[in-house]
Amino acid sequence: MRSRLRVLSLALGLALASSAWAADSRDFSARLDPPRVEGGKGDTVEVSVVLEFKDGPVAGWSVGVCTRDPAVARPTEIVSGAITRTGGPGGGPVAFLDENVMADGATQGVVVDFANQKTVPAGTYAVMKVRYALTAQPPAAPTCGEGGGIETRLDICDTAGTPAIRTVMIVGRDSILAGDRGPATLRVCPPIPRQIRLAMEFDPDARAIVANEADEASLDISIAVDDPAGLAPPLHALGWQGGVRHNAALLDPVSLASSGRANQLKGGAGPDFENLTIQPSGAVSGVTWGVIINLGTIVDTLPIPVGTGVAVLQARYRSAVTLRESDGDAPVSTDLAFSDDVGDPGIRTAIVIQEDNERSIVAGRRETATIALEPIADEHGFIRGDVNGDDRVDIADVIALLGYLFNRGAVPPCLDAADANDNERLQIEDPVHIVMAIFGLGTALDPFPECGRDADGRSLGCRTPNCE
Image 1 (cartoon, rainbow, N blue to C red):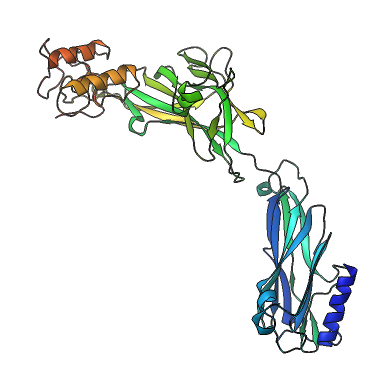
Image 2 (image 1 turned 30 degrees about the horizontal axis):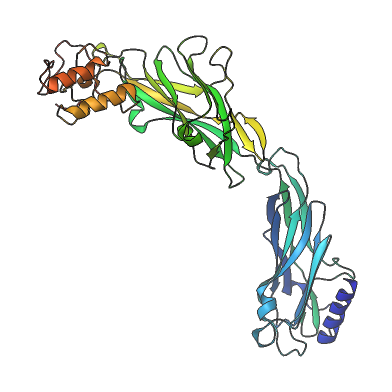
């Protein structure tokens, strides 16, 4: 390296025959861009060296970049700027280019044309990029956003290399030292861990239920990954456990079951172990779950892509109270939240993640959900047996009601219409009554077959009345 730098000094001296340092240093400035760069340990970052020639024409230049603390950021490579490839004779490379990387800095020396026929006009040029390996290990906290991390400074300097290379430009016979010099800061940041986020959301069409004994809402419980560091690979879940609490005075849990991708695991067989429990009362009312994907020799995992929630459970709720407009009752909202205290003993809410063959339990960030209980409307029209709300009673209504009762299907838009035997409950007897009415094997209760209202004044309510 020492011999190469001597060649550079000799080349500049012979080509330029420069005098002692002369002219105005305000005509030449140098800076590093961007002025601040952040990354994590092991990352490679780039800083451009930008020279501004306010006078010209320029016959050559040299520049040095010094690193204050090479233990934090070590220069590894130089990428030559476009001007070195196109600024020389005939629009080609410059006549002489010497670039060096050392432990604590980097240098560049350029002679545009040994014959002094070609020069570079005044202007601003990114003459090279210096790549740095970030090698320091910062403390885990605080994050860079909170003022943490380990910093080092980069400077445009006159001391890089042996012998030292000054940062100068050559105009005619004058060597002009750089005046304004803009430094840069490199900061090594602690990693920002990916966060497991537990989310729950009611069906958009059922964020409110009628406060009676039959209307239900489905709550999807999902696992998601928030990844501030931008790490692309998904996480892989091996199991999940936890609980969701509710206000037992307002809500009754009806069911809890695995759903979505969880049911597709292991070729459609689902997880090897599931313990899904409803805790309707006690110190903390709620639902709990414990799921283990693999107990046997067939191994599977649940991929969780970054930023995308994967639904794994579905819970269904109905109102524990009856609210009526005729009694002056107003709508009531109630919250559901992930909790470590549901059950006896309480089930800690966590996800088991497999990463690089290491398994770790991640508690995760937790969201809440809110559902509104709406009072039963005073008056609403319906056709008894019109479960799907299409203004007619046929076999499609039987299928819709069976799906709701036994296969977690859609909630009928008007529960009174689905209550075929008018006993203020939805049970297996109701689809039987509808079949008998369709085929003339029994007598349908009013209002049927025309739109009407419940004569006895009792009502399960209609979220959407299916006739006027």
